Structure formats: structure tokens, C-alpha cells
Image (cartoon, rainbow, N blue to C red; front, side, top):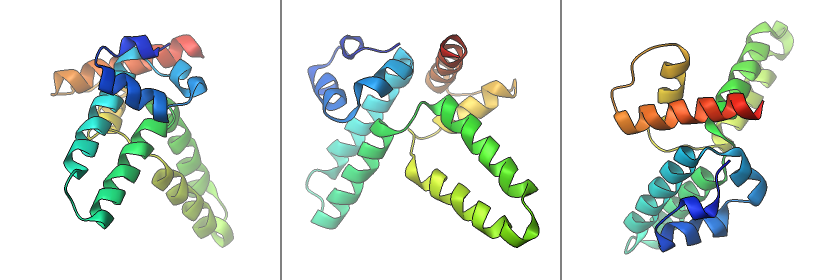
Length: 146
């Protein structure tokens, strides 16, 4: 269970406090919280000085990263929904696929995290040590929470 106190930098703590609901915070691993906030802060820093439209788009992207459900929960739910779409009768398969696409578009994660979780769950190597550590922590946290 992650807590705001797990974030040592005041700017990161403030960002998490502003955008991550307590219920979600309790469902994240400490490592996933730190990576999300670090990624969102980097995105927000890049937004400074950009034209308004670009600035707003980057802010929206950062907020989606901070507000998304835990990555393991997302990966499992996405797999379940995708399987439902594949098994749906032909007459409604497109509607099911549209629901999957909407679900995918609603959540965003730091670059590489979703792939790292998938690789770890499949027993494959993750080259980036930070992503591997976060993926392993998120998976372990999801097993404990279940």
C-alpha cells in the first residue's frame, strides 16, 4: 500500500496529493506510485512554455497517468475484455471491440510499464532495471491485495 509519505520530493508529493485519490493510492505499490509521479512530473515540466494546446494535451496525459488504475489490474481487465471481444458473436464483435478500445484509451501509464508487467508475467526478461523492479513490485502488491 502506497502512501504520500513514500514520495520524498515535495513537488512529487504535492502532485500525487492533487491528482491521486486516496482509494487509488491504497491500491498502488510504492514503486508504481514513485514511477507514475516521476513520469507525470517530467511530462508537466516539458509542457512549460509550449503553446496552449500542446500544454493542455500534456497536462491531460499526466493526469491520466496519475489517475489510472493499478497497472496489473488494468492488464488483467484488458485481457478479460479482449477475450470477451474475441469470443463475442460476429454480430456484436465490433461493439465489444469498441468497448475495449474505449477502456484502453481511458488509461495511460509511464512509458514501458505496461509492457514490462506483461513481460514479467510471461516470465520474460525486462532490460530496463527500473521498469523490471516496478513491474515486479506491482505484481507482488496485486497478489497481496487479492
